[in-house]
Structures are given as structure tokens and as C-alpha cells.
Length: 130
Image (cartoon, rainbow, N blue to C red; front, top):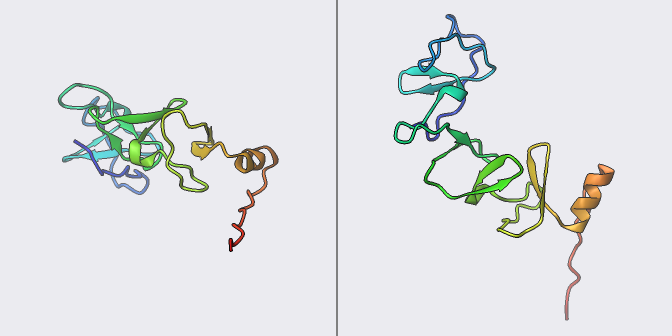
């Protein structure tokens, strides 16, 4: 229904935007364009199952109700987007991770230290082997 439809910023629009779903003015910071209509993000629903559209915490694209997802806190992620924002490692079920300010981080000891101190984690260089 809206796969790949980016949120639009209503600022600078000449006329007041009215939601095609609830027919109320859109005063939200962002709105969605679906087909020929403008919508509140909360009003967009799946035409097949009437579920609300859930956005991925990694890429911000819509998640289909049929897709498998990973969850961290209240955030849902496509399987391909469930990766650490610092080192880009793919996280799997059972892996320890931290959701900080909406960003998913793996639970490596040096990253945990950086979370506590606010310092950038140090990257350990591998020593050459003979």
C-alpha cells in the first residue's frame, strides 16, 4: 500500500492538508501521501487486514503485516535492518543489544563502556600473526 512512500513535510504547502482517512486537518509534523490522498500517519491502515502501518526502527520504511520482524523495546525492525548502528553487525534472536535514543547497539563490552561514559568506542586493531 505505501511501501517506500517517504513521509512528506507539510511545511510550505499552499493549502491546508486534510487527511483522506479521518477528514481532519493534518497539523502533524509529517504526513503521508498514499495514492492521491494525504494522510495522518496514524490513519493509514492495511487495506487487507485493517492493521496500522508499522515503520521499521532502522530504515523507517513500512513493515508489511506478513513480514517477520525483530523487536527491541517497542520498536520493530525488518530482519535486514536489525543491525548495530556502531559496527553494523547483524543481530539475531538471543543476542544482547541496547536500544539507545532509537538506535540499536550491540552489547559488546567496549560499546557498553562508551554508553556509560559518552566516549566514542575504541576500535581494537588485530595484531598480525606469523
